Length: 297
Image (cartoon, rainbow, N blue to C red; front, side, top):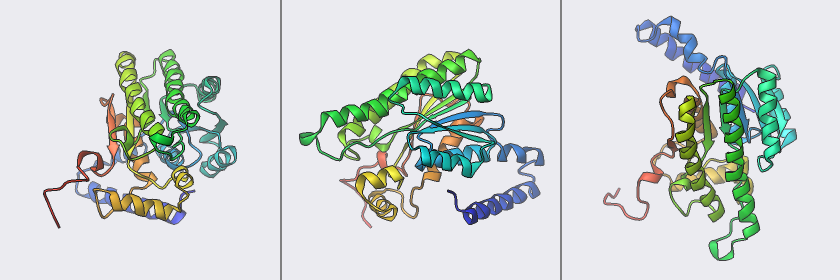
């Protein structure tokens, strides 16, 4: 759940910036509502929405005017998140993305409840076991692919069908990873799956552009989500410390909200002509070498 004091301080900072911009005539008062309601009238479906990046994104979407359906396999958490945000704006439904029928039913539920689907954030995923290639468990590998690749394919398929049926110029965003760019940052099954998601995004982009539907991928650096903490058996502070020590951009720790802000941008009309991209939220991690440097401190 978002910290009320943190939300209050963020709103105060935002209002201060708006007042300064309006006073300096850099922002017209008529545009203030647009700034605060970037998804007004939109309907979104978020998979893996009960915790971590999915939960944070659901909160951002609602703050900006969207109606949201979150789906997950963590039913208690999912219902708690929906209730904490407000059941007039968020609904929860159980969905295991490995089961196509459940994905189809989740999309149908969203359209039946809210009349349409504008945004899909295909975020559900798993890390898989932390074994190297010499000891890889192929059953675990198959489960990772089923969740991270087949599940994403199923959500894109059924969300896009709903958008096409309603002539909706929708936005589909899939969660990738820095592991979609480089090896060695995650288990082999996970790395394979995240590379595959980029292929799905590019293929879907080429097909769905004719219907006005945008498809993009957001690929974060290490975030201390509950999934990551469980996988590595670390406290959030330990995950963040490890990520920070290997990061390129210093002075800031990547949080789920930073990724959610990027998803919000890709979901909004501010990114109206952006499609087929794999947007890294990594502080430059994937574009620099970590084994050789010309520069020294």
